[in-house]
Image (cartoon, rainbow, N blue to C red):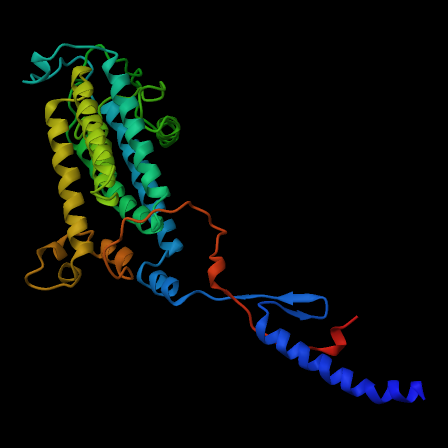
Length: 343
């Protein structure tokens, strides 16, 4: 009698169990499938809109990095050849500023230490920026163009050394070979183009000043991509003082002529302003009779890198983590249970 009652109740228990499973699947964020748990992740509408407006486009970022590396190689190769074209017996040219400034050898090291500080701060701003890929592309385009211009200007007009006491490597007594150029390029690149580490022993890279170029560029990056309000105004002033002090120490050490610094300031700031004007205004991104910036030879390159960016980049920062995802965007979807997968 008791056994019959048990078998009569068996289907009812099964139905209740199925009903509980359905309720569990509709309310729980996790759905068990045998021994497996399926969790599907979807981006929220806000994140999807932002990723569409400010796309990462990592492959374009890699192209921009390759662009700046190629131009840096051109610059170092140009310096390797310029070193052989100079005349070391010529005295320094008359210079209104250098002739009235006291000479201190240690000032060049101070200038390059300030360059490393400014570069480190600018790198932190870029790395911790939410849209760092866009910033890297923009900076690489500008730096690549500056290095390309510098590779041309230093070799077409070779000036005598501004400091007769600066140690320059001995010139070759024969025409420089390709292998020797490659060796010098690798040596300069190993020291990042600085003299403080003893790897920059080749002379002739005067027009225009690479030290001034980097100092000004770091300052422009920081004031452009950090908020104007709050504590950042102090950072802006500090980097301005670092740039001014670095250029002054460069002049005191007679690392460059005054004309080198003036040309570096003019070329760096004008290139930065033109590039930012192109990427910030839709009118300058279309060829027309009134868009004179469209006649620049690098205009199409700048447009290609920025064609999918749909607005000004906001000053937002986050901790860089290539594997992070938002837990708030995790949603669940159930699927039909396969009895064959049950163990």
